[in-house]
Image 1 (tube, rainbow, N blue to C red):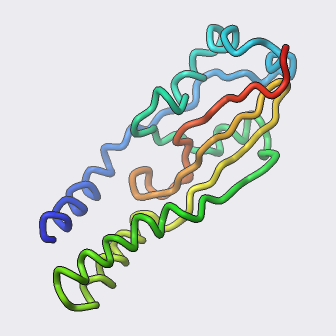
Image 2 (cartoon, rainbow, N blue to C red; image 1 turned 135 degrees about the horizontal axis):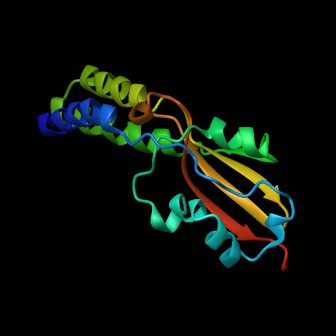
Image 3 (cartoon, helix red, strand yellow; image 1 turned 135 degrees about the vertical axis):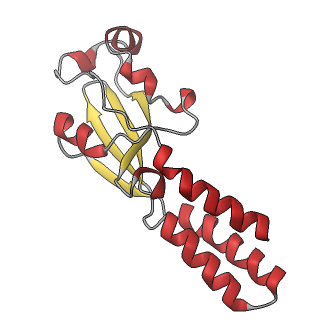
Length: 158
């Protein structure tokens, strides 16, 4: 139990080491979104930087950088499952180990403080693509909503 608390404190202190990264060049011209994905990745290597399959931890790239270029997304979906999945097991584990409910409440408060907002999917429809961008808000990036990863799905054949 104490190892878990020490680990949480350790990772909280490391949050200042998060990698801040400006969003590099990405397509903005409507005609570019009609190109095949291979061509887009060649012209804009930034697409691969945030690709879901290439990313383990993510960068602290504010989502506002993307909305400035593409405007507001066509759809925003909230992921209601993540914060409870993180908070509930920790609350139960601490409560069971301590045998006192207050330990679970404290641990829940700490974890919820680290992840205060449910993640969201910002979804843009651009030309032949649907771009689903996973946006997370947590202590690692000073609570600024950031681009965790994106998936480019071709919805129309070129």
